Length: 220
Length: 272
Image (cartoon, rainbow over all chains, first blue to last red; front, side, top):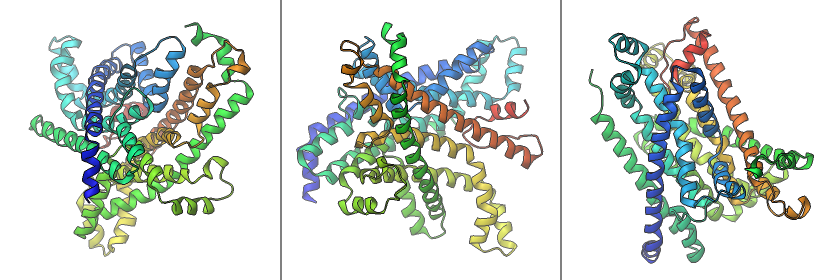
């Protein structure tokens, strides 16, 4: 038992810096995922076929390729092609775009859940397409997809560990845990503390989503 | 840009030996995925039933188990198991693995990889299945009970067939994720497609001409394409099955479904 605490206190700098790297990685990727995801969802539901097609191809490629493959392409692969991306840029871009494909699908099904009748009603009242989206569809769609976005955020927290393991320049929680383990050989203790770190993050995300859900619930 | 579009680099990926090497690696991924899928479905259902069990301690224990495993990163679980799994377990696997398994699956490390995949995915699938069963109207179980069916019979003939069917789309999308996640076992040095890609694209410069860099980018774009093809086909297949099922049970007019899958696209596709 004493050793359990000692592993944490002795290696506190590693654990805490790794924790914050994971938090930063997830935060930046989250912004990318939401922005790109919204844009792709807009393409997916655009009233023009070629745009729909572009959105669809983006979603199918990024949703069906393993994150690890994306990371190698963006980091080592593009380096060979003469485009050397920083580990942070490559990591957040991959995690962000990978999640963006799921965000786009969630938003799209949210928009469809609002119902075509509302779009028709809004257009017949004289609002143009962008305004219909802005004032009628999106406020409702976003509410219905909050739980879905929450589980995507939790998935992103978990996927951030893949980024940390595969890119050298990104010492996240799992990366630091491996480092501590190779130094102390206290495998169970080290990984237990890292697990606590990840569970804190996923638990916080779960609670935050539940709060948002009740706050923005549509009372009918 | 010259590097990316140089036809020689692409040709190099698809020369017979290289292509075979990559596809052999990919086959190992599919085999790992298949084994993990079978066990994850079995244990997932078991965990879901335990969670729904009327015995409080049992359902709480199952709930904690599921919540812990599904909230940890899969790569974390795999790395931990590879380091911490007792040696006798690995030896047990090595001496009991069927002989017809390919060489890459004979190593004890594979056990850590598959165990990690099953621990994580059975927890996720248990949640999906539980949601499916809970979404059923209570009356279904009550009606079955009043007809004199025992609890196992209710599950077997009334609750599970309906509850699980509803969750087919969500389950398939999780299995697609599992298929992608098989690449993570490359981290613990299992010889699958990522490792094969690495081997192909490093250090063969001598054979391809001294100042030609091996086409790492092309190799991994190719590997990515393999996954896109298989996973896209899987998702199309699940959608087809879903539509057929819906037509059969509702007489041609697919109604709204409660699931993660995109509802309207289903309806549109069915009426095409």
